[in-house]
Image (cartoon, rainbow, N blue to C red; front, top):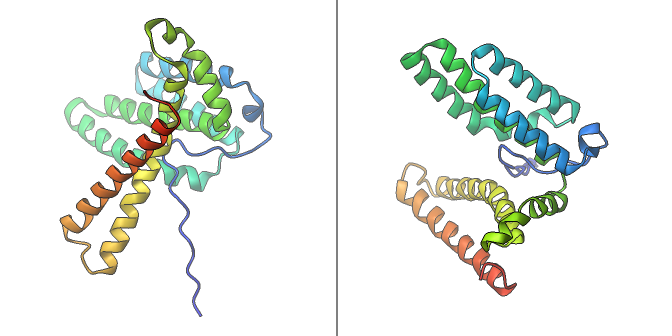
Amino acid sequence: MSRVRARSPWTGPLGLYRPGTTAVHRAPVAAKLTALTLFGLAVVLLRGPGSSLVLLGVAVAAAVAARVPARATLRGLAPVLVTAAGLVAYQWWQRGPAVAIEVGADLVTLVVAAGVVTATTPADRMLDALERAARPLARVGLRPEIFALSVALMLRTIPALVETGLEVRDAARARGLERNPRALLVPAAVRTVARARATGEGLAARGLGE
């Protein structure tokens, strides 16, 4: 009797929280978000392939120090790596190898650095930190808790949409319709809209977003 291995959910390039006792896990959330902001500015402001590769090495070293699982990280990064490869090929053709390496390395560096923060920070602590950081927005009429909730929904929605696409593809393949665009796009669109409506109704029932 053959065993069918259950497919683990795709968590997206930013991953999900993974408990641990490393120094990165124990660091305050505010410190991690501040470091991520400064690191992102360095990635944007520093020019040249050399600095880009050094910063990529720093991001990978942070992931190793945080003991983020390599296989899950690479699986989550797959779409980013494909996009980076396309950008590198285009920039190499248009502007040369130096710019191509810089653009590709910067993209992967930013995603890896953000993934280290989300993988070492529980969601509730992340939301609390974002809510505190967004308190100045209350002066212009924006509710900080809504801002934090929006970020959380964005992080959760991306892998959920990908998972929906995979389920629709498997269902179409089982019916021999994997090459039919309607069999893929229509169910995926319907399920996506239904999920969005259910989320909106859930938020409205809790008095959020009004």
